[in-house]
Length: 394
Image (tube, rainbow, N blue to C red; front, side, top):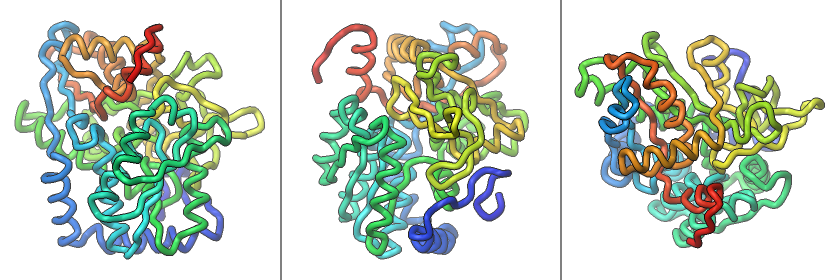
């Protein structure tokens, strides 16, 4: 990567009004990323507060049932707040505090990033406001309640499709209004440089741990690492320390929604093309005029119309593969893992589980697969029940 670019992707396509804030952030990050005291403080937060390292769990029953590769689950669902989001948020809120900011703002889709940001803000005594698509506030009402309980103000965004992309746009607008005391805690490996790099670095703890844990358990590296991809933060976190290891297949699982041959999909690599949006050049789902297309997935966390620039580059150079997984496949995997291992995955993570279920039987029994279980699924039970025609009240 040079100057915020991953091949042709990345960059800083933002209004002049935001440049100062982005430059200030980059300078602060470059100062603190190699600072031992910052590193120690963050590691202590990871270990004592978030509950890291997260477990690498051998899914024996899943492995036996599928009859192929040995399957390990990286249990990010066991982190405090129930997802991988806390890794990046603790890093960014700590950084904001060092920069002298007193207020943090964030966008959220499924609500996990919003909950994590509200959590870290409460911990570090900062003001917090979260922007969330109106549609998502209905799908994830429990997370809205949690954010408010943690002291955050939640703003439902009614523009556009009233989902994640609109929440991002609104948060960026808000940042433009109040940069002096406010830091925008961006939740994925997207947006203008340095965000894709910052979020990746904080999430890379996932692959660092997988590597150490698997070497300890099996004495070798995995043959494949799978993770779901929306913007792509849990996936880049799970892939990063394996990028140089050419024997390890890296597989990102996108949300195909009702199918990549329909308009109701969010599979960017499968259906998108090169464009510029939310401050970055990358692949995006677009209409014939180059406008960002409305996207759809059962998963509020994956229905983003683009993919982070580093993923776009890994795809371009053939280092990572990206596959599309439908709502139906994800829901089946959600139910299958729950019954087989007693682990209810987030519907986002279930997209990766679904592809793992397909792949494992085709791999030899001497092969090893790691699926990043990016979050837990209690937030999704209402949506999945509804998808199955059952109306349950929270």
